[in-house]
Amino acid sequence: MRIGYVGIGIMGRPMAANLIKAGHELFVYNRTARKCQPLVEAGARLMDDPAAVAAEVEVVFINVPDTPDVEKVIFSKRGIFGAARADLTVIDNSTISPAATREFAERLKSEKQVDYLDAPVSGGDIGAQKGTLAIMVGGEVEVFEKYRALFEVLGSKIVHVGPVGMGQTCKLCNQLFCALHMLACSEGISLAKKAGLDPAVMVEVVSSGAGGSWALSNLGPKIVEGDFAPGFMVDLLAKDLRLLMELSGESGSSLPGAALAGQFFTAAQTQGFGREGTQALAKIIDRLNFSTSNE
Image (tube, rainbow, N blue to C red; front, side):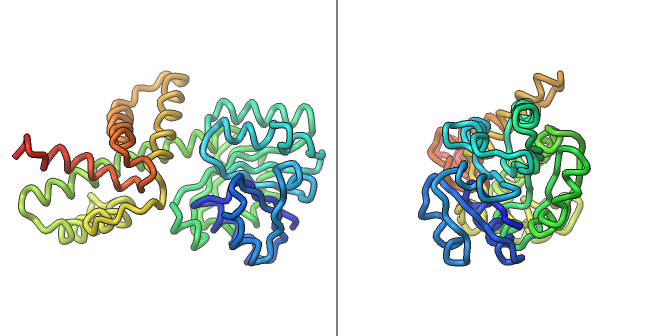
């Protein structure tokens, strides 16, 4: 297929690379063009803006940080909307507002006859590189089935979760677990250190038991080693928790754990860790446990 990909970041770059490896013709755009260079070297064509991408392809993926970014990619002066044809499909891999997603899809369908799938992903940069992401897709079943083969290039768990907007809703549920597991992981490692237990040993044992989680298995060792390089940034999870709390209000749900986690991730941002990996939350917990005032 002739495929567009807009948003070549930590996740978008390996996902686009996997589509090239699968034999598809890629047309790419990123606000910082130099980030596209590895893809260009692999055979992708670098385009000047999202409209130029949409004019060349039958399906365009979007992977950008937040709701306003997706809106800009689609509806700005040189966005996808201006070049959209009735045979185009937009697939959004970003994590954004479910309500805004429904609005975007409705406008594209009613004014341009363009199909829309919200297909956020989970699995971090490692899953993106290996093509083993979990992908939760909202939209019409027929459109989902049409592009299932592309999703299978990108992920190993692909599930149609309902109509447009439900992909984003499912992703926000996922982010609730990610945030709380990261908080538990940070507290457990800090407790082990404070109580005199080798944290590396604790991580190894607990990861294999009922207390294990993806966060503990994959990010626990990084915390122990002092590796806070981002696979997924604190800033992005803090944004997702903001969206989650908006959804909580819209649905009338009470999420006290998510609210608490949101406070800790906001504290991590405030203390300058926003561009680090989500495992940098451990620094906040360690500061509580090992600050001079607590000694």
